Image 1 (cartoon, rainbow, N blue to C red):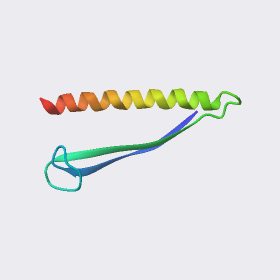
Image 2 (image 1 turned 90 degrees about the horizontal axis):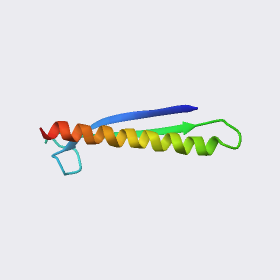
Image 3 (image 1 turned 180 degrees about the horizontal axis):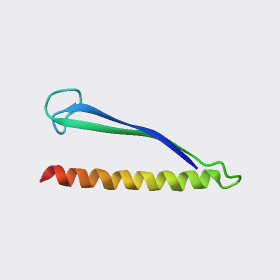
Image 4 (image 1 turned 135 degrees about the horizontal axis):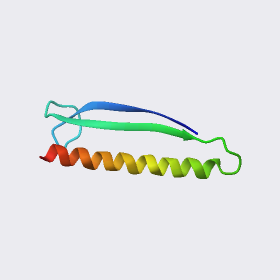
Length: 70
């Protein structure tokens, strides 16, 4: 299986807004691809891996938001 991707951090204006600004907020964007070259089961493996990555990223986001809210 191969997992490739990028993470982009960019200024996001003020909290709760969109667009560039100097309000101190940051937008973190993930883009990636999961590939499994297993005959017959490749797509199921890819979907399971993608779900696991999405779950981990959501947990990371929650932890970051909680930390920033302190």
